[in-house]
Length: 315
Image (cartoon, rainbow, N blue to C red):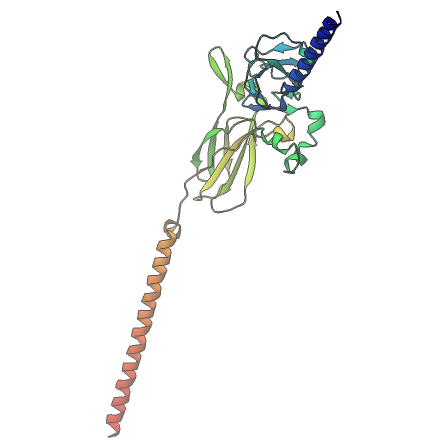
């Protein structure tokens, strides 16, 4: 009887120890952060390698938790929540639950889970009440522990727009901008950022005269803007970026586009390359040396002739 009690007691202790070890081995999601570009929203995290999986739940405005259909017991450390976060004006929060890969019975409370920061896809705000005033200092401080975490976010959350520049008349050009596409579709059409942001979307145009360093920035509410007051015959270079004034300053501007320049009327010296200018200058110097040499020789010969004439006259 005593032996049976000892065996049962030993079995209970072993079970408790196994549960404790299992809980200890279960990896916890760390460095949880949101990555959003053109309203395609991903939740990412890091975890040490193991045989465990992850299930992602999300909630908004303190509503009940809902599981993401595509992120149940996944081995990856990334979850695409774009379709679940289609109500872009809400503040979302996600929960990453660690789960065993097999069908072993377990209690959720016994396994680790990690909450994400709150995130508003429309405003691109990450728990603003705590970080809005601190993110700038963290980004400017590479040794800070959170520096790499915020670097994982795209530079603008709105990608670079394509555009064209057309010369309307002397001293005036037209800039035509194409809205970047999003991951959302409606009635068979892929939506652009204009379809989502509507009148809240502006574009910033930065331009400068070719060869100068001074830049000027202007903003337009539409996809087409005209820039006037340019110097006639000069080449100007342009870049554009989406601008959303309703967002906090950190998330207002999208990525800058590739630079495009207008043709200008160049003079002879601008048309020539540096090599051609150096070669021309070298030839000019040689010609001057030849002219000076010939002139000196002619003058000497003339002086000799004059001296000989004077000698003959004296005799």
